[in-house]
Each structure stands twice: as C-alpha cells, then as structure tokens.
Image (cartoon, rainbow, N blue to C red):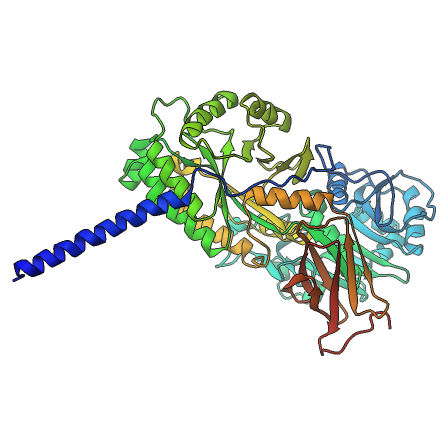
Length: 604
C-alpha cells in the first residue's frame, strides 16, 4: 500500500511535472514566434528583366553557334546560354564558315536537319578547332551517303537503323551524381523506365570515349559490351573534340547539364558558378479546414485536421530530415472553396509553430482542389491569415499553371507586393528559372511522389549545370485521394523512396527555403566572373563583380589535381575531381596540388 505521505509526495511531483510541461509548452509557443517569417529577401535586383532567361545575340568569348531547325534543341540551348551568359549565333543552311573574332565554345548541330550544303561549314569549324556537339544524330541514310560526317562523329559502321534497348548505363565522370544503371530489375520496377529506348546502333572508332551506353534486349544479351549502342560519346579528331548525343536528351531540361558536362570533360580545369540550393516545396499544405471528413475518417479513423497534424506532418518531417531538406509550405486555408466549413485558428497556430520549430517557411498558394477563382481564393486566405498571422510576411507563392502576368495581377489586386518568388508547375515550354520585373519564377525539377529514370537523369543534369533542385509535391491528393497511391501508406512509400533515391548524392549542396533560394538565384543571375590559372599552375584565381553576397562555384579538375585550400573561402568535395567553392569576396584563390601532395605545374 501507498502511505498518505507517499501519495501526497507523488501527487505533488505529478502536479509539478504537469506544471513544468505546461510552462515549457507555453514558453515554447511564446518563444517560437511563429507569427513572423524568419527569412528575409535580399535587396538585389535582377539585371535580366526578360521573362525568359536566354542567350544574347551579342557574341563574346565562350559563345555558341547553332546549326539546325529543331526548335526544342534551340530553346534549351538558349536557356543554358542565358544561365551562363553566353551569346548564340544561329547559322543558316549553306552559310560559309568564317573564323570568328571571338572564341567559340562549341558548334551545336541538329543532325536530322542537316543538308548537303551544311557539310563544308561543319568541316571548316572542325579544322578551326571548335568543339562540335551533335545534339541529335543525323539520319542513318544521311550518314551512309556522307561518310565524312560519320567519320567526323567517330562512327565506324552502322549496325542498325533502330535498335530496342532494355536500359541505359550512365558512367561516372560526366554528370554529377556518379554512375547509374537505368534498367528495370527486381529492385527497379518496370514503371521506373520511362526513357526513350529505341536508338540507332553505331559501332565507334577506338579513339572514342563513351559516357553513356545502351543495354541491349535479351536477343543480344551475349554481345560484347564494348559494342553496345553508344548513347553519349566523344570522339577525338586531329583538331578538336566531337560530342554526340544519340537520344532526345537535348530537347529536354537535361540538355543544360549535358552542355555543362561537355565543357567540363573537354577542359582540364573547369570553373563555373552555381546556385547551391536544394528545395522541398509542399503545395497546399498545411490546410486547416475539416473537409472530405467522411472519407478521411473511413481511411484513418480521425478528422481531416487531425489526420494532417498527427499522420501527414510526421511523414513530411521524417522525409525532410532524412534527406537534409528544409521544406517550404504553400498554405491554403482549405482545398474546396465551395465548402461552408470554416478554417481552424487553433490548427493554423499549431502547424505554424511546427513550421517555425523546423525552420521552414510558409508561402501563399493560388491553386485549389475546387479550381476556385484565384483572386477570391487569395482574398479569403489573406483575410484569415492577416487575423491570425498579422505580422507574417509572405515572400513566395505557388501559382500552379497560371501565367506570370495573371499571377502577378492577382497578387497586386490582393496587395501582396512583397512576393518576390513564384513557383509554377513544370512546363517543357518554359525555362526552369525565369526573371521579370524583379520577380523570380521557378518550376520544379521533380514533381509527384513517383521515382522514374527520366527524373533521375534530369536531376543529375540540373545539379551538374546549376547546383540547384526543387522537389514539388501537391498535397491535396492526400485529402482527396482518387487512387490507392494517394492513400498515406502508399504515398509515404513512394515519396520517401523517390526523394531519397534522387537526393542521396547531393547533400553537399545547401538545403534552403524558397526565400533563401530566391536570394541565391538573384546573386547567381547577376554574377559576372573570370577564372584564370596562375603562372606556376598551382592556383585558380576567381574574380567577380560581387562583394559581400555569398557566391558558389564548381571546380572540376583532371590531370591528378585536387583542391588543397581556398583563401578567404571554403570548399567541399562533391566527388572525385569536383569541388564546391564558396566565397563572399570579389577575388578568391583556389590552391591546387597533385594527389601525391607535390605542387603541380599545370602548364608543363
């Protein structure tokens, strides 16, 4: 038995513990300051005022020539040139080659649009030492007739006009993220495979270096792997390098990483700026209204708000923590704006507290499950937010598939002039990053909870070119599940596997919220820089027009070089021969050495 004295002592201790928990919880809420946004946009204006960032027509050192008629290839080339501040010269069919007054980085060629009259221009460019990149391969009939072009591409013979593959093998050292095999197996279900698996089969000359090859179907399973269909390769001519892409990658977002990889594998030392920003963005989450409650109760034995707080939030936290990401949350008071149910002040306060504790950021959303009028929706949300979060400044907004102009009109009409970054749905017709009227618009590099091989290859390409990614996920599918995949257990399995598989090789890059990403994008877009080697060959000197704001560069090295230190800056190793440099100075020195620790004379 418990004596009265012990019972009293235990009772007092329980009351004290309860009181301490209450005080701690109250202090936690008071100190969390969830009603304010801890992230602030910088005051950097974007110099580029065009909606689409695109290469200029003014040629300077490092500019690119384009020969062809493929609008998709040209659009992605212009996008890459815009990020890298390169000029683009469009070559007309039959044009006579003239040695340019500036150094040309490469001549990009659309193979299927080649005509007989283009051959002299290509041959002259090769003799001038200009790097050639066949963004798409010419028709095999054209190569059979014009063997000089086939020889220039390093093609010894044409094995087949069209061959079915069962997968592809990307080798280490081309795109960031290392080696990967894109083939369905017990570990990789068939629905992962969404790449183009039908290509011409070429046998290459021995002076070729293959960066990506195809896996043949079972009929050719015993074929010598050195004779499998090449997908991306480089051929060394007497005068230059010729790169070939034997697939449709250069028509897609993946092109921007391939252009960067071409320059990086061609040059023994390559230096270029990156954004250094990894983002996880949740659309229409949190929402703070009980809706579709009957279905949610049937599936999870709780109402919608409780479901979002006790089951969905832990899932998001687990995924973001495991992958070292910091989510940005695009809030909505509700999903169905035809519903008469009112949003919960208590739910908003609780979820905003959780967001603040996890150093996340809240933004606005113009999208809804019920396709409500965007202006009416935003006004409804703001009336509620301004009451409960009167001191919270929203700097970011999810606009779905709205145009930039329409979204800005809605924000303006609702007096949300502080918004400086928009997130749109992905469109193959638009740039990944755009700037207009000092507002940044970005679209996701990864959307939906499903992992596929194309997503993986695209992410590797974007990380290579920009050191940037944005994983966007629409969360209203959990409240209004239309398939079993949208039920939480299945969603969690798909989403967790997708994010982990995609991001496990890129944790060297910083996790950011959208406002932090906006700040870094602005610095990146305004950055002008030069990189040069010291006379002794043991240093890279990077000078830029930026002082004070943090800048990031990737340095890719060959010839057994490694980075030993950075003066007044930091560096991290991404993978063998690849380093991330961070600095806030207008001049930074990257010190090099050989792997055996003896100083290298780079030019010997």
